Length: 235
Ligand code: BEZ
Image (cartoon, rainbow, N blue to C red):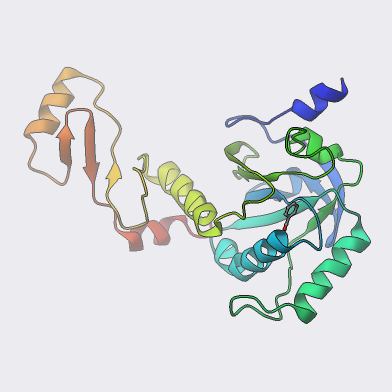
């Protein structure tokens, strides 16, 4: 049973596992209280460690950008509340890193000494560590559905611009019924759904309109960055 708990990993399309937890911003009821917002639940191995400190400073500095995209942030580690508080105070009062200083982490950081939440989200990966959570990221949509899952090892700091790109790409795909190609950034061409009939495939190949087809199954169209941000921010 113990191992099964450790191995539980929410998959893309699953309902986000529910929990109540104590955090640096009070108690939270997850994902219930985040209904209507996107939310990123992420874990880090331990307080007072260098990679985690660089990550928290970066994420906290980007928090207004995520807020503007209606996306809340929730952190977790297998440390206690007082350790979290002391670490976040140290970050604000003492650490200057890559031009970031006086950084206040305003999003909740979950205390999870019992590993109850970490186990529900597959954050404990014994091959990496029995006592520290790996660097997991769950992007959860306003209906509480897991839409993206990332797991990074202890030594590898995450790319938070990529996590932001994931949120924007998911929201754009939902809003405009398109898909996004490799390395897509807002303003780049997007992929239209593959033709579902021979007639549509032929029309697309012959069409001189806004679509560009590399072949019948691979067509793109323009989607202005301004239109994307106009439609998806705040949603
Ligand atoms: C770090 O955040 O620096 C770290 C934490 C656990 C293991 C290795 C590095």
